[in-house]
Length: 136
Image 1 (cartoon, rainbow, N blue to C red):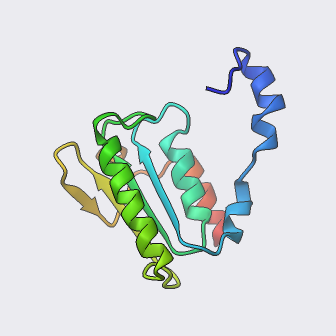
Image 2: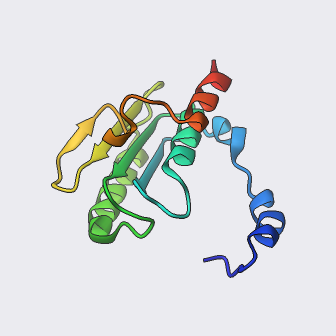
Image 3: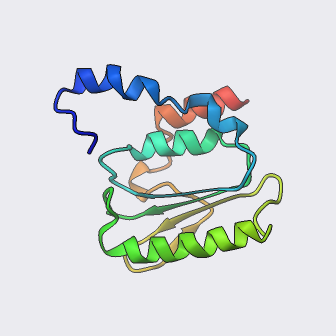
């Protein structure tokens, strides 16, 4: 998507110039993240590790069996995101410590309280464990 065909050149010229890392901890406005479970541009583990670093009020939705473009769920994601933004601008989502997570199944059900897919089987990927340890 960035127009690079050489991964090493991409890493030097672009990726190294875009580190979010600990900068996300400085965000103060509410944050919403929506991602496909198998996003090929950002691994779910990386997205969740970034989410863990956010200290502002936050919400995350992980869409089961979806990739970066979110396929058939894209319309729902955009609708939800627009409604979420409207609520955030109205000040409804700014409670300190707000942390809302949903794993959205293909059939529309949600597993609330977690954004972890069931195939993790109660494990914690390395990136997430490291982000949690850095916060502690």
